[in-house]
Each structure stands twice: as structure tokens, then as C-alpha cells.
Image (cartoon, rainbow, N blue to C red; front, side):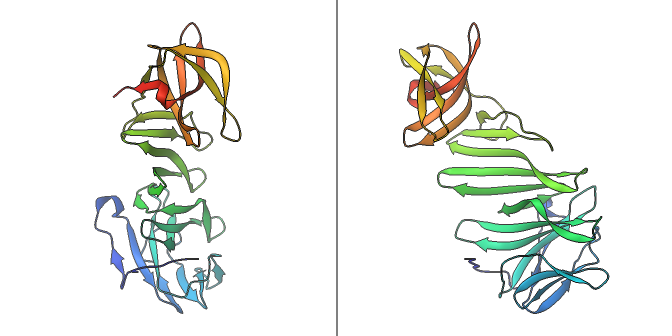
Length: 264
């Protein structure tokens, strides 16, 4: 069920530099509005008719954005993707006390219509030319995702994921349009890898199973061994780190957080 609280009372314009090329328009029920843009797709109009959000194309033909029924005033963030010039729509989807979620649409110049982005939902978004910053909390974890715009696919993709899971530490994963690199644990707001030192006299490495339990292996580390953290998992068995140990050979496995001291 969608919850809308404290919606904007009139058309509003962002004043911050990061959002300078995006504006927010307010779509009234049973009305249509022109887009205040100069990008590809700006000759369309957005309409809210009989609870359905749709678009009227440049030739006057209307089509639906296939969103849930909307009977109240609807904020829509509009702007362009940057250098490629496609118009972008972020239609408010839901809101609670913490987060605001938006459905993301990009103008498809080939078909002459707005299509749902490959990243369909963004939360608490901040727009800049070619990028979207999406920030939200999930329990104790704070997520900070960066969406980049592909000049090839004419759409957004997640190019960086950051999850702050404890004070000062984040898991980071960077991606290009085709694949993602391995995860790493870094200091907050940096790309600096985090190391740790084993503090237990002898601790066995574990494998993480598909059901998120851990199976002990024969390989072990001893007090003073230095490792690099690459991932984390918090569950019923407590916090675990995925670590890399560079000895005579490279060893990868999971250790309980209680068995290591994380470098500051």
C-alpha cells in the first residue's frame, strides 16, 4: 500500500548544484502537464487520468506507465541524463517516515516512448548529470548506491554500491555496464581496503553455505596473522568477515569478527 505524507503544494525547483538540472513538478488528479525540459522526449505531456499515470506523446497518442493507481497529487522529478540528452522521469511511488521511493523512467528515442529503467526504483534520490545517488536504510545497514548512465544502452545501471554495516566501515562493489568487481571492505567514504589481525591463538577458516550458515574447514590462522577484509555477513551466528590471507599461497575464507582486530 502506498503511503504519501506531506506532498508538495506547488511546483518546486531544486536549488542545490547536484540537482540543478532536475526539477520537481506536481501533477494534479485528472490533469496533464507539459515537461519543462529541452531534452529528448520533452515534447510529451504527463497525465493523471482516472487514477492512472500516463504519457501523451508528441503525436497525441497516450500510453500508460503501468504504475499503481494514484488518486492524489503526484510529485514527479524531471530532468535529463546528461551528455546523451534523454529525458528522465522519477515518479513518486511510496513514502514512509524514513524513505521516499521513486519509479525511474528513461525516454527511448527509438520507440518514442518512456520506458521503465533497468534500475526501476530509486530511494531518496539525488540527481546530477549522468548519475543518480540513491540512499536508504535497511535495518542497521545504510545503503548508498550510485547509478551511472550508459551512453550505449541509453539507460542507468548501478556503478557503485556502498553498505555501511558498522561505524566507519563499508562494503563496496564497483561495476561497469557488463560486470561487477569483487566486493571489498573499506573505510567509510573512501576506497581504502581494511586490514585486520588475528587475535585468537588458533582460528579455523569457514565456508559460507547457501543457507548462510558456516562450515569449518581444515585451514586455520594463528594469532598475529594479517588479513584483508573483503566482505561481511551478520546473522544468527553473529558477524563474520570474508578475509584474504597472503602466506605461502593465497587463502580465502570466513572468520568470526570476534577472532580478529580490525585496523583503524
